[in-house]
Amino acid sequence: MLFSLEPYFLFIEQTKMSKGFDILKANVTIESVKYFLHFIKGGIKMDWVKLVYLGILLICGIFILVTSFSKKNDERRKFINAKAQSYAFVIVVGALLLHVVESMFYTFQGTKTDTHIVTLSPVIFLSLVSIVYVITLLVYRNKYGN
Amino acid sequence: MKNKIKELRSSAKLSQAELAKQCKVSRQTINAIENEKYDPTLQLAFDIAAALNTTVDDLFDSGTNKE
Image 1 (spheres, chains in turn yellow, blue):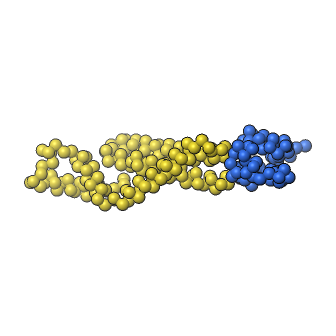
Image 2: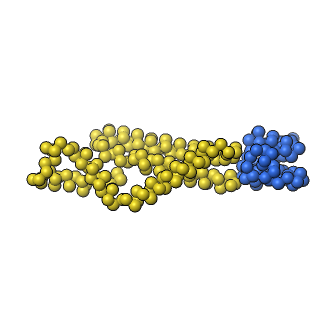
């Protein structure tokens, strides 16, 4: 779990009990409130973190595109790119396998909820793959003499 | 893989950039091969051998003992 759900449950319980707003009559599910609160909380407290995070992601993405699709690469550069791509692929497979195992675990345990989706956020997933790709690319560039 | 590219290139009075241009690769690739950091493909090995007027056998030492 990336964040604790305890404060949200507490907030929801307090909201239910308040006279001004009846959560059941307003046709709002607990899950949607949880996501809304998570979004609000993240939006207020993590603005700079998100900006830096997305900036790194963007740079990594551009770097990947420039290096992978350049037709001027000779055989050594293509070899280095292939190595980096294979490592990124291993990471993708590993992350997806972990997610499958996690899903199976929660399913068999009988505690699967929508909040578990947070563990495989697309932004985090893409960042992880991009960063692994770039690091592998730099390591192999050094190894094969650039 | 050990090779004699540097010696043969020097005797042919070719720079790394000139050899790279003849073989249609980057100078860094020739440098990496000379410094034994990268093993070229068969095609590139033949291209380098042709550019240096030698054979692949003479250019590269695989390290296996022949009887």
